[in-house]
Length: 460
Ligand SMILES: CC(C)(COP(=O)(O)OP(=O)(O)OC[C@H]1O[C@@H](n2cnc3c(N)ncnc32)[C@H](O)[C@@H]1OP(=O)(O)O)[C@@H](O)C(=O)NCCC(=O)NCCS
Image (cartoon, rainbow, N blue to C red; front, side):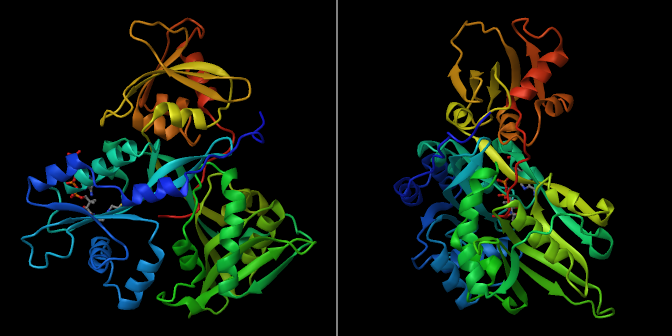
């Protein structure tokens, strides 16, 4: 199955701008107003933004932002639709009691295509106002605004796992966190012919977004990354602290073309100078050689006993580049959450693991996607979706599932077989094409599957 003919379809800037400037959802506005609360958008360049940012920071139990940090955030947040909930009776009424931010991003899906997806972030409700339905009003409101803008998918990363399933989100791409004992690991991977060099932080700030743009379409789960994130990784945000500890390197191939870069910091071990710890803040590699050269550099640093890295994939080649795989302690967690809003648009954008026909009986707690659909996947892996007419019978394997479960499969991060074994999906054969349930499960798994694990390299 080839993916070369698939053109990524990104959201246009005008769609993004009108979503940013669009109104808050009327249903949620009325619901909050009935409880004496005001739900409104906040202009990033306006007077209300500083208070909004302070409330969001406090909501995450973080410290107060300095004037420099507020200014740096304001300068870098123009891409966000920013919304607050205000309590006019609070002693500091200009400080929102709840915050949320969103923007239309590009989500890479299986087959190297991208789909416009609403990223949701900065969800906080003040401890003084918690458990009164404010988060629910904001989440439902942003999802309805997303639907109204014609954006077929929403996505987020989470502070706590149990929060978002009730709105139809599911973990669709896992992240792995690695701690590698460097003395034990022993590099057995390639030793590419190019060179690794130190570069200034402002140079890596320029390089990383360019490299990311070249690679993000290859991996389901990745998104387009705003400038503020690159400043954070590179330590080039003027308001950031302890930037001096960040070290930046690049890999250039034998022809001198830069193919990868990384930013890391070393924490000294005061009781044993030979046992420092490296934290890899971000590593982006356009080629296998760049990947190998950068990781080898990090694992072979002198005076370092441990390398730590976050947000790696479930199937990192790195594991096969060290002689002792037990030198790496790897923990897996839910990371990129996805919520399909428009089933046909979402499913027709991704590619599939095998040709076949499935019927999807989808239930959706918010009603956006509820319905019965037929997915027909052709030999090229492209899918066509239509709704099943009332009374129509379709000869195919039938999956009965919630929108969260369908969303969980969307990036190829979990198989139907796993979800069926977990009791999260009901699979049956309506037409007799598969003679046993396990054959029906196998068919559905191979159609909805994908050959590489999805990954998202940032937390947003
Ligand atoms: C998480 C948070 C936003 C919830 O806000 P809230 O206004 O208290 O939530 P709501 O009252 O709207 O609750 C909505 C639902 O989520 C559930 N819920 C809320 N917080 C929860 C938690 N920490 N764990 C599990 N469920 C939770 C509620 O029981 C409720 O369930 P239901 O509507 O299905 O009955 C708020 O506690 C907060 O700001 N936490 C700290 C910051 C944070 O972690 N934000 C999330 C970033 S991803």
